[in-house]
Length: 426
RNA sequence: GCCGGGGUGGGGUAGUGGGCAUCCUUGGGGACUGUGGAUCCCCGGACCCGGGUUCAAUUCCCGGUCCCGGCCCCA
Image 1 (cartoon, rainbow, N blue to C red):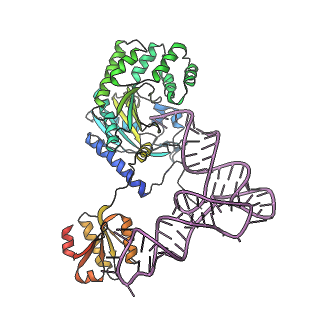
Image 2 (cartoon, chains in turn cyan, brown):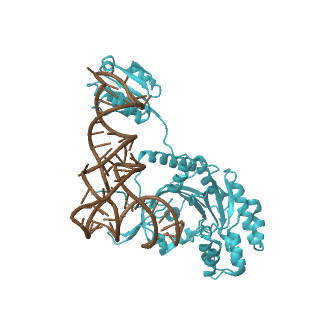
Image 3 (tube, rainbow, N blue to C red):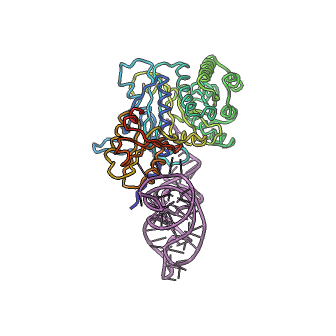
């Protein structure tokens, strides 16, 4: 019988687990530097938590089952509902609340490039203020994490605004924005005629369809935003206000990163619950799906709890991020780490060598002791593989004189010093 | 759920309707009875699973499964 990991699930060995850990710890460090605090929540949630806001399409793509108590439960397919539940059930939180988490997320979908059935998602949300400052802070956090991973200049932020899009559509006499969004969302995947066809299928044709086509293909920097929109629809006061806010947000984001920030009118982020700004980050080569995505969702807490708490946040999966880091040569294990590999050159020194290793560790340093039963040459080969900077060689000679031989693995040089001298050097 | 392409040791490969399979690498050990990353030697380890065709299948056919990519969807 042969066992393999399930379709879409991964076994992660040290050569990947360590770069990965490095990636997560960078994200954590940056989040902390922004004043965000880590939270955690269950991996299993009631299925209804997702039914309320998303409907059957999402539910069909979850790992769900009926538990022994007859409850419909699901492996969490996203962080936000759980986070919002935590937020709304603790009534004494002082706003703004800045939270992040690193949950495992499950989705029952066909695996493909950048998408698996289980992944880790870095998730950050800022609750309370509904301001361009808060929007910019969240996007700035996302960008700062990517920058800290060494990806500056290798990605760009594309943003849009749900409210702006709704107003633009409305000026074209299109009331059902949600349906239009689902077509606009596919803009990049469709040829021009297919896009027009898809719009026609939801009763948008003629001039409005042409306008939407032009709009969806538009990407602009903040300074040209107003002009670009005014070329397509008349600027009402409402619309103008939103455009000012977007431009302000973009300018603020530019304070966080040198990466390009543009408005891309094709970014609408599926259906779901976004109410204001939406954004995604893409690799500049355009080879991968989006690295991260998020936006403002001011009504989800109302939906889940009746409390109105404005929110803005984003999620970033580890799968695409890993692909991007690999492509940029940033997926490497650390080189030799500071520490000692303890070898035994002869029989009868087990206790002494183990004591040496234990003392090294007590002083907060790394010590890996060979488990013995083999020649010194084999032990030193293992020492090389262990990637530690030094080896300690202990044999009868050292045991008799209470000394240790320290070998520098890079240079090959070694010297014998007394045990106490060695301990003092740690 | 659907579509396309794949599946030979841990990784990378050669090859064939018939001698349970090539080479490299990795792993273990040795040459080196107290010295690694060099060299040489030895050893371990594979034809995805099931069914069919056939005297005979790793090779051909069918189904499944997994991998890669795409669709749907992307929370």
